[in-house]
View 1: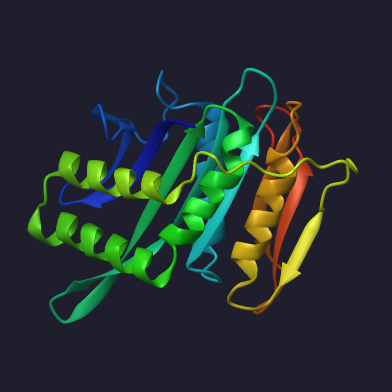
View 2: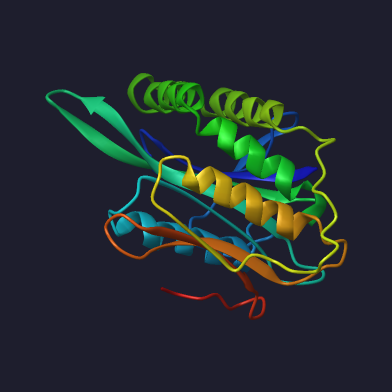
Length: 228
């Protein structure tokens, strides 16, 4: 289901990117550089999430994409965690991406993200990231724990229902706390139910100080994505 995890965390030495699996360990990778472990598609996804978070309008977001045959199916979520410092708190950016074996696993992984961003999931993530920054917790230990916990949230038997009509949602606009999770699951179901490999991208955009829109678009090619 999950081929590899890509995690960007803040450590005592600054932001670091890691790739791997909890069963086999993690290797560091250069930030912002294409390599054998880091695809151009991941960098596009990372940039989209960063642009949205830096707008200051939301604290957490999710995006997923599949740019076509023989290219990675990716889903990622990211946000800010406030780390206590003497006399202040400091927002630390966190990004967790998953390269999937196929789009059939997308719905299960998006449901896993919904659990990871629940009240209890955020508490556990905040605890782990705080320990990494403040206590110098071993990075391999933390990454293994964090990614294994995420995989426990994903049901490998969860398969999206077949989309017999062939129709797909275009945009879901919402303004309530539960809106994003419903939108993401709807988009993932529409994407993952199609047995054919189609270029698709789901991303978040802001329309005003209160309205959010999650949009599903046909991909424009392996190096293309829509900017707000």
